[in-house]
Length: 147
Image: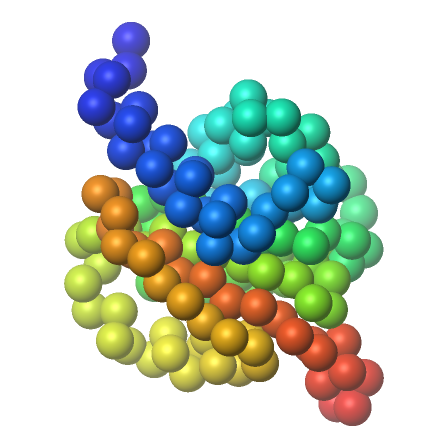
C-alpha cells in the first residue's frame, strides 16, 4: 500500500502539470517518462479520458495538445522522452516536465534545448518532488515547414 504522504506528493505534481499546461478534459494529452503509467492513471482518475501513453497511442499524428513527462529522469532520459512524444504533439502544444529534485545541475544545456523545442513562453514551479518546467510550442509547425 502506498504511503499517503508520497501519494500527496504525486498528486501535487499532477495538479501542477495540469495547471501549467492548462489541460482541459477536451484536450488530448500524451504521457512519457519512467512514471508515465502512474501519471496516466492519475489523469484518468480525474476524468481526463483523452490521455494516452506512447505505448497506448498507436500512430503519432501530431494530434495531442499537451505532453507530460514524469519520473525520476536523468537529463538524458528527459531528452529521450521529449524526442519520443514530439511526433504526437500538435504545432501549438504545451508540455510539462518533472525535473527530479536530484537533478540539481539543470542550468545545463537544457535551457538551449528548451529554447530550440519551445519558441513560446516557458514557466516553472517548484513542488515537493522537484521542479515542473512547462513550455509552449507556439508556431512549431511553421518552423518545421520552413526547414
